[in-house]
Image (cartoon, rainbow, N blue to C red; front, side, top):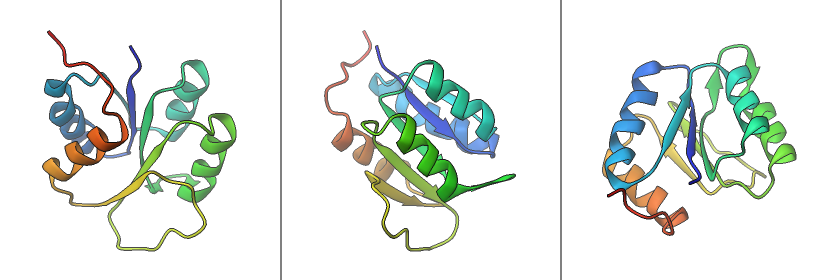
Length: 119
């Protein structure tokens, strides 16, 4: 089964997203380091990427560009702590931190309705 990759430098955000989505049958892998996250994308592309735009040591838009170059078919949802306009990006959605977990679930379900629920 495919998985959702969360790339966010805040461990509690990674944990929260995994806890919010796992009960609905989504397999969630997290990375608090952009290099590790990019490595995971290369090793086994996820079905969906939830990407923090503000990561230490890299421009969020540059990382998004690299992800889209590697796996253009994988939808990406941006997560950001600042209200900002992301222009000219092919993203599946954007969540402004702090985001409502129900909004997260609805967005993921809209993008990935085909995943079966866990037994």
